[in-house]
Amino acid sequence: MRVTLLIFAACLIASIRADGSIDLTDDDFDSRLSSFDTSLVMFYAPWCGHCKRLKPEFEKAANILASNDPPIKLVKVDCTEGGKSVCSRFSVQGYPTLKIFKGAEATSEYNGPREAAGIAKYMKAQVGPSAKDLVDVKAAEAFLGKDEAAVVGFFSGSSSSLQGALAKVADKLRESMRFGVSTAQDVNEKYGYADHVVLFRPKHLSNKFEPDFVVYDGSSSKDAISSWIDANLHGLVGHRTVDNSAQFKNPLVVAYFGVDYVKNAKGTNYWRNRMLKVAKSLQDDSVMSKATFAISNKDDFQQEISEYGFEYITDDKPRVAMRDAKGGKFVMKDVFSVENFEKFLKDVKEGNVEPHVKSEPLPDNSGPLKTAVAKNFDEVVVNNGKDTLVEFYAPWCGHCKKLTPVFEALAEALKDEDVAIVKMDATANDVPPSFDVKGFPTLFWLPRDSKDSHERYEGGREKDDFIKYIAKHATKELRGYDRSGNVKDKKEL
Image (cartoon, rainbow, N blue to C red; front, top):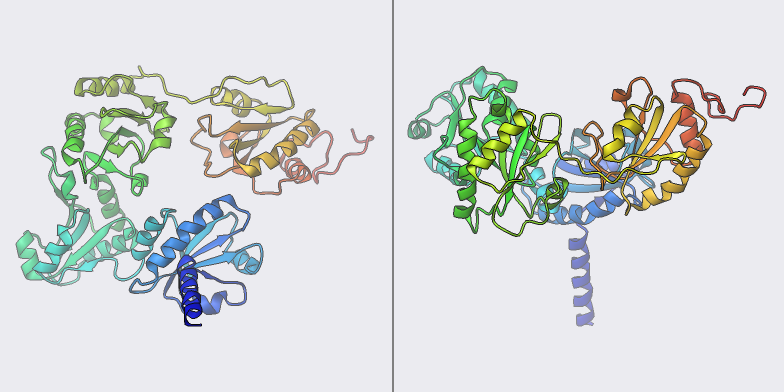
């Protein structure tokens, strides 16, 4: 009997640990959520592939955060069953949708990582004060002793407009940046600042080409301080990781190699120092000084590397690629050296490097359903002189496979109309940057006379759903259908 009870208890504990999140419905959402100080809510649909992939990471994060002080709850709401009303109230239009709540009030969208450790780290940054109070020298040394970037405000004690602006910046950037504040005289004397804001870069990025810290010298404006942090955080050549990659904006130059500051800091800095030398020399260049330079671990960015046409990197030499301000891709084909790197950047600047385009071969487009590839996208989609519905799909996607016969039937039904029905394999071709494709299938409607004003199609996925949408939004009324999508009488044709 005792053995049975122990087994039952062990199974119960394992069950709790395996499912650390809380499921809420319309009936208990407000009452339960109002009892939580901070929570992350995932609105989902059981059939959604992205939701299925996120759920295990969401549960792991819930278990990580179970003992956090203050507590953070992770909540799930099924929008297809018991949570329909809640999902409608919070304007959930796609799955999964994640929102951060303070009590029962949604305070912000969740735009953080989608893996357990990243979710936990992001959510921990949402609770407690956004800036640590550095009350004495010991606290300041401990805070700045970590090998992470930090922004510290050193103030004389009396409240100032700069101090108030920094507090707002800390609230805004707390999930991606560490902030500290000192009003202690001994701390300010040790570091030599009073009424200044200082950005301290990570110790492992220290180098001879730039200082380890930067002192703010601008207005007491939240936006000005935020822009200053963005511009100076990573220095001349930043360490770009999966977690911080969104902080690196185009135009962006990246060297991919075995970046490892734990096991091979010397080897990592060997290549980074060469990039630093070039980046430093370009600070006065009116064009290239606007570019962001970074190093990234080749194994962490395999998919990105493949987008540039690189094979799997087995040697120690960096592979360099660049995206310009519009997202165009350029690849350095020569073996990495300071000289070749300088020449590559000069050639890109002067327009002597052909953009790299990943594209399938040109297809046979004799049938009603047209196929776009990167090489013919402008011809088939942008400059075809027709209203266009385009589907971006992945060959392995189940929802895409289900949509294929529907799209074929739709194209056949509209083959005599001034409407193009187009599909594009987004895994085998470069998708133009103006199309935000993060899942499959993703569909866009492009009006004939304003292709730049395309909008995401969020309607039903049956043939009649598409016809009704197209009939309503077509530039000219369809020949075979009225504006409601009803088949016209023969007398009307």
